[in-house]
Length: 172
Image (tube, rainbow, N blue to C red):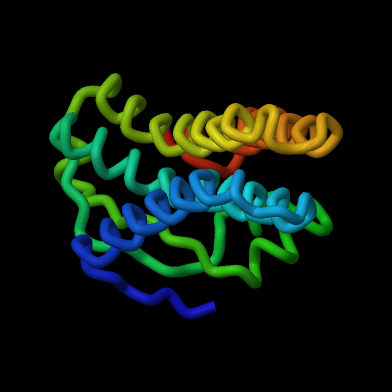
Protein backbone atom coordinates (compact mmCIF):
# COMPACT_ATOMS: atom_id res chain seq x y z
CA UNK A 1 0.00 0.00 0.00
CA UNK A 2 1.38 3.40 -0.99
CA UNK A 3 1.67 6.01 1.75
CA UNK A 4 -0.11 9.28 1.07
CA UNK A 5 1.10 12.49 2.75
CA UNK A 6 -1.62 14.72 4.21
CA UNK A 7 -0.93 18.24 5.54
CA UNK A 8 -1.32 18.63 9.31
CA UNK A 9 -4.25 21.04 9.04
CA UNK A 10 -6.17 18.63 6.81
CA UNK A 11 -5.33 15.60 8.97
CA UNK A 12 -6.40 17.39 12.15
CA UNK A 13 -9.59 18.53 10.41
CA UNK A 14 -10.37 14.94 9.39
CA UNK A 15 -9.83 13.78 12.99
CA UNK A 16 -12.04 16.55 14.42
CA UNK A 17 -14.79 15.95 11.86
CA UNK A 18 -14.66 12.20 12.59
CA UNK A 19 -15.09 12.84 16.32
CA UNK A 20 -17.86 15.37 15.68
CA UNK A 21 -19.58 12.85 13.39
CA UNK A 22 -19.39 10.19 16.09
CA UNK A 23 -20.94 12.56 18.64
CA UNK A 24 -23.66 13.49 16.15
CA UNK A 25 -24.45 9.79 15.66
CA UNK A 26 -24.75 9.39 19.45
CA UNK A 27 -27.15 12.34 19.57
CA UNK A 28 -29.41 11.16 16.73
CA UNK A 29 -29.40 7.44 17.59
CA UNK A 30 -32.12 7.60 20.29
CA UNK A 31 -34.59 9.05 17.75
CA UNK A 32 -34.21 6.08 15.38
CA UNK A 33 -37.22 3.77 15.66
CA UNK A 34 -35.63 0.58 14.33
CA UNK A 35 -33.61 -1.14 17.06
CA UNK A 36 -31.27 -2.68 14.49
CA UNK A 37 -30.64 0.66 12.79
CA UNK A 38 -30.20 2.38 16.18
CA UNK A 39 -27.66 -0.27 17.20
CA UNK A 40 -25.88 0.12 13.84
CA UNK A 41 -25.71 3.88 14.42
CA UNK A 42 -24.16 3.37 17.85
CA UNK A 43 -21.77 0.80 16.38
CA UNK A 44 -20.63 3.22 13.67
CA UNK A 45 -20.13 5.90 16.32
CA UNK A 46 -18.14 3.40 18.37
CA UNK A 47 -15.85 2.64 15.41
CA UNK A 48 -15.32 6.36 14.78
CA UNK A 49 -14.37 6.87 18.43
CA UNK A 50 -11.81 4.06 18.24
CA UNK A 51 -10.24 5.53 15.12
CA UNK A 52 -10.48 9.34 15.02
CA UNK A 53 -9.31 10.50 18.49
CA UNK A 54 -6.12 8.44 18.24
CA UNK A 55 -3.83 10.66 16.16
CA UNK A 56 -5.42 13.85 17.43
CA UNK A 57 -4.51 12.80 20.99
CA UNK A 58 -0.91 12.24 19.86
CA UNK A 59 -0.88 15.62 18.16
CA UNK A 60 -2.32 17.59 21.08
CA UNK A 61 -0.25 15.93 23.81
CA UNK A 62 2.84 15.96 21.63
CA UNK A 63 2.55 19.66 20.88
CA UNK A 64 1.98 20.41 24.59
CA UNK A 65 5.14 18.41 25.35
CA UNK A 66 7.18 20.15 22.65
CA UNK A 67 7.06 17.47 19.95
CA UNK A 68 6.55 18.68 16.40
CA UNK A 69 4.95 16.77 13.54
CA UNK A 70 5.57 17.14 9.82
CA UNK A 71 2.40 15.66 8.29
CA UNK A 72 -0.19 12.90 8.47
CA UNK A 73 0.15 9.69 6.51
CA UNK A 74 -2.54 7.51 5.04
CA UNK A 75 -1.02 4.03 5.08
CA UNK A 76 -1.53 0.48 6.29
CA UNK A 77 -1.94 -0.12 9.98
CA UNK A 78 1.03 -1.28 12.07
CA UNK A 79 -1.30 -4.11 13.18
CA UNK A 80 -0.40 -5.82 9.91
CA UNK A 81 2.98 -6.65 11.52
CA UNK A 82 1.39 -8.66 14.31
CA UNK A 83 1.05 -11.82 12.20
CA UNK A 84 -2.35 -12.58 13.73
CA UNK A 85 -4.19 -14.43 10.92
CA UNK A 86 -7.37 -12.42 10.30
CA UNK A 87 -6.34 -9.13 11.92
CA UNK A 88 -3.06 -8.84 10.00
CA UNK A 89 -4.72 -9.47 6.65
CA UNK A 90 -7.49 -6.93 7.27
CA UNK A 91 -5.05 -4.38 8.71
CA UNK A 92 -2.85 -4.62 5.65
CA UNK A 93 -5.79 -3.74 3.38
CA UNK A 94 -7.52 -0.90 5.27
CA UNK A 95 -5.71 2.46 5.24
CA UNK A 96 -5.38 4.37 8.53
CA UNK A 97 -4.19 7.84 9.46
CA UNK A 98 -0.83 8.18 11.15
CA UNK A 99 1.33 11.11 12.20
CA UNK A 100 4.89 11.67 11.04
CA UNK A 101 6.97 12.91 13.97
CA UNK A 102 9.78 15.42 13.55
CA UNK A 103 12.55 13.24 15.00
CA UNK A 104 14.75 16.13 16.14
CA UNK A 105 11.94 17.53 18.29
CA UNK A 106 11.22 14.06 19.69
CA UNK A 107 14.85 13.78 20.79
CA UNK A 108 14.72 17.14 22.50
CA UNK A 109 11.89 16.28 24.93
CA UNK A 110 12.13 14.23 28.10
CA UNK A 111 11.51 10.49 28.16
CA UNK A 112 8.35 11.14 30.21
CA UNK A 113 7.03 13.61 27.61
CA UNK A 114 7.68 11.08 24.84
CA UNK A 115 5.90 8.38 26.85
CA UNK A 116 2.85 10.57 27.43
CA UNK A 117 2.71 11.48 23.74
CA UNK A 118 2.91 7.85 22.61
CA UNK A 119 0.47 6.52 25.24
CA UNK A 120 -2.11 9.25 24.55
CA UNK A 121 -3.27 7.78 21.23
CA UNK A 122 -3.76 4.28 22.61
CA UNK A 123 -5.49 5.69 25.70
CA UNK A 124 -7.87 7.77 23.56
CA UNK A 125 -8.71 4.75 21.40
CA UNK A 126 -9.45 2.73 24.53
CA UNK A 127 -11.44 5.33 26.50
CA UNK A 128 -13.57 7.19 23.93
CA UNK A 129 -15.60 4.14 22.76
CA UNK A 130 -17.02 3.80 26.27
CA UNK A 131 -18.90 7.07 25.58
CA UNK A 132 -21.10 5.07 23.22
CA UNK A 133 -21.72 2.39 25.84
CA UNK A 134 -22.82 5.01 28.37
CA UNK A 135 -24.95 6.90 25.83
CA UNK A 136 -26.73 3.73 24.69
CA UNK A 137 -27.78 2.56 28.20
CA UNK A 138 -31.57 2.46 28.28
CA UNK A 139 -31.77 3.16 24.56
CA UNK A 140 -30.95 -0.35 23.37
CA UNK A 141 -31.99 -3.80 24.55
CA UNK A 142 -29.64 -5.00 27.29
CA UNK A 143 -28.10 -7.67 25.05
CA UNK A 144 -27.09 -5.09 22.42
CA UNK A 145 -25.82 -2.66 25.04
CA UNK A 146 -23.88 -5.56 26.54
CA UNK A 147 -22.44 -6.20 23.08
CA UNK A 148 -21.12 -2.63 22.93
CA UNK A 149 -19.68 -3.02 26.43
CA UNK A 150 -18.05 -6.31 25.40
CA UNK A 151 -16.59 -4.68 22.26
CA UNK A 152 -15.21 -1.79 24.29
CA UNK A 153 -13.68 -4.11 26.86
CA UNK A 154 -12.24 -6.36 24.14
CA UNK A 155 -10.80 -3.26 22.46
CA UNK A 156 -9.01 -2.35 25.71
CA UNK A 157 -7.70 -5.90 26.13
CA UNK A 158 -6.51 -5.99 22.51
CA UNK A 159 -4.79 -2.60 22.80
CA UNK A 160 -3.10 -3.59 26.05
CA UNK A 161 -1.78 -6.69 24.29
CA UNK A 162 -1.02 -5.16 20.90
CA UNK A 163 0.37 -1.73 21.71
CA UNK A 164 3.45 -2.89 23.66
CA UNK A 165 4.29 -5.31 20.83
CA UNK A 166 3.72 -3.34 17.63
CA UNK A 167 1.81 -0.19 18.52
CA UNK A 168 2.43 3.15 20.17
CA UNK A 169 3.56 1.87 23.55
CA UNK A 170 6.30 -0.18 21.85
CA UNK A 171 7.82 3.10 20.62
CA UNK A 172 8.45 4.46 24.10
